[in-house]
Length: 77
Image 1 (cartoon, one colour):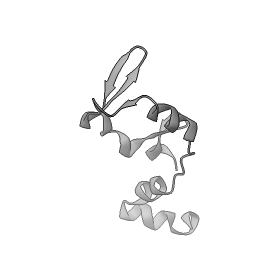
Image 2 (cartoon, helix red, strand yellow):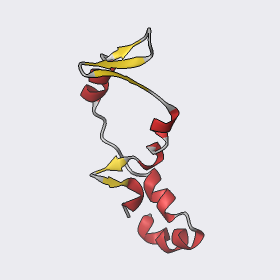
Image 3 (cartoon, helix red, strand yellow):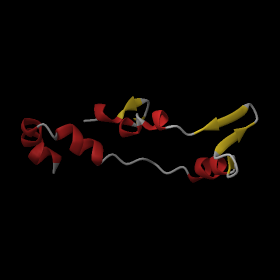
């Protein structure tokens, strides 16, 4: 589909958005489970051997451009 509509998408300025929306991330359930084991419901923080970490809004500002293979996803074409 991309090969057929690529030029139209580029002219419309939506090519990168479409390519990014079709990127598939591999699920790493062991990582999610491991991180969830560190969660403290009382303080709403992650407790690691080196200290506590909390979630803040500023930590999520880059999620729209998550890394894939060491590069930002909007660079995949």
